[in-house]
Amino acid sequence: MLPGMRIEFLKMHGLGNDFLVFDAAALAADAHLDERTLRALADRHTGVGFDQALMLESPRDAAACVFYRVFNSDGIEVEQCGNGARCVAALMYARAPELGRDLLMGSRGGAVRARVRDDGLVSVDMGIPAFAEPLRFSLDVAGQEVAMCGLSLGNPHVVLQVPEIDSAPVAQLGPDIERHPHFPNRTNVGFMQIVSRTHIRLRVFERGAGETLACGTGACAAAALGRRQGALDGQVRVDLPGGSALVSWEGPGQHIWLTGPATTVFIGSIDLTRFTGAIQ
Image (cartoon, rainbow, N blue to C red; front, top):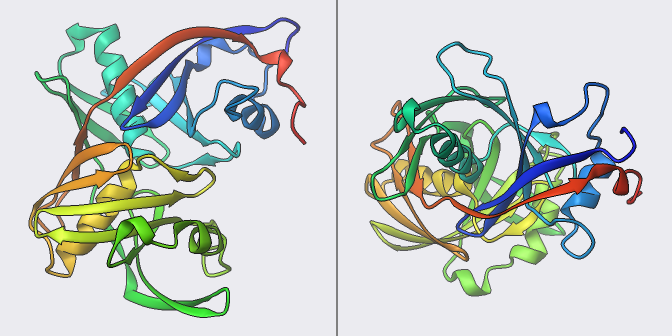
């Protein structure tokens, strides 16, 4: 890091899933945003505080408007973030409305189509769900057999169906499943309560971030799983601790769409050198 290096950032959130958003161009050419610095920035008492950091780079595809990278609060870069993608789309449209409301963005998880709606909500195409084989399996977790289903939306997920979300053992099982040897790259862990064919409740223990107020890809994973098993319709309201999202998926081979709000909280600037080496 260069002495006194200060960057501007936005604090954004989608349903309480919050982000530090900044342009890669704001970093000096020889600066390295390492895991230790990201963890220090993510601290909610001594840093900015966030579930994920979103770094915006120049597009790698001529048709795209941006390439975004996602870093969890533990400093590890991951493939995708549904709520983060919605926030990036809202920001790109706010910066350049002439781009139109339909945007193409790039990410490690692949190309993402987004639509900024007239009502201010943002929809993103999270691709085609890829289900695990076998879909349903059990793992020994802290001495008990736990049944779950697995799938990927550019990032890994397992979903456990529970009778009541408020009493679901998220804090007890989430960390052990996330880091279970069965998942060499760790996994996101969703706990789903089916209310009706068009309504579910969900809590997610996110890989590298812990339980968050909302997880966009987790909402898509749960809705896709319920649809695949015949328990849900193609349009599902997903109630998360931070609010409600809409997931639309017509079935195998089809793209899944996530819709919800994307909010800018404030704009700030910070001297990154203050955080270098702050957390071991």
